[in-house]
Length: 141
Image (cartoon, rainbow, N blue to C red):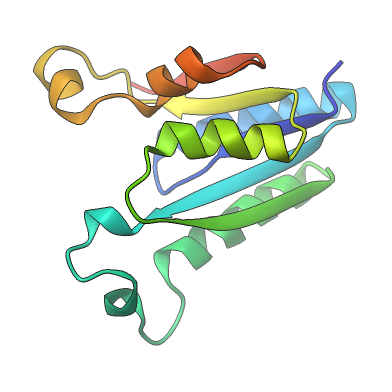
């Protein structure tokens, strides 16, 4: 069975649904859950320094919620926030899974089609094309 399951997490419901499925899978196989959150600075015109401020940041909230879900399932887990300044998110996910010796990636997908898919692309599709380990997509309508 699986020993280490990677789950990319963000603020979306699709991501949290994928995390819940990863926890269920990890319970069945006594695996560790490795959750990563990627901060994509390229989407912000002001760059890294413009994001600094007081209080909890959105990534802090994502990580706290992720850690709480992993603990609720009484699992071993690790979390990480990764910085990105323009690299494709799919590349980061695949590379991190390999570097962290994960043997499964579970991730949420929004299921965009048509023009929205063409304009926004698909991180999940990029991961599916590149990954050498199994990828499970959890669709959220």
